[in-house]
Length: 253
Image 1 (cartoon, rainbow, N blue to C red):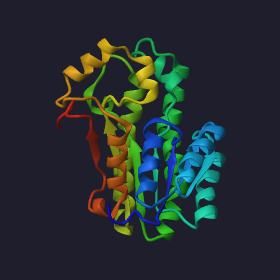
Image 2: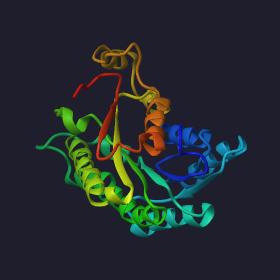
Image 3: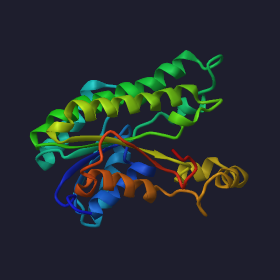
């Protein structure tokens, strides 16, 4: 893809799964990558694996709901690699997701935690990345959304609300700073067979999802990574304020 070589990107939530695949894809395209993760050790290990293959990668521990921690993540990219050209915000609280029910029964602490990570945390990443992107004459923000934002589910109320809110955030950023070269978009994955999903879902559940997917297979982390890399690249320069569903045709809009 054009325009990724020698660029500097952050993958916030990049030690495993979709984030790790995205970090790997960006380095394959010649970019330098800072991997942020709640586990500093996992972030360093992920970066070390990429560096062992010759990539420029740095692992940093950070907590997306703590502003000073987010600020430090952005600063690490600038200090280590000289600037910032884009950020993929991919953080989530899986434990909260497992206790996310419906409007009548969802524990308020689960609701609050989900919005803290999926909305407030994404705003913090946006707020502190923007000045650095503007210093470079523009750049790209890509958020990980979900089909839950527009499908309507009987469960996972907080998750769906938070992802819908992300769409409002990216459209605001595109409208406010688009003329200054800033692009803000999201990918909305379908069922992606990360290691965590493979451990938690049985064959019948996967088969049921595949049955409503207009594709002969379920997703792999590399599918989402390719979409994020495209949106970060110069090839995606004329895409702004959009949500790209990467789900094998499970949803059609």
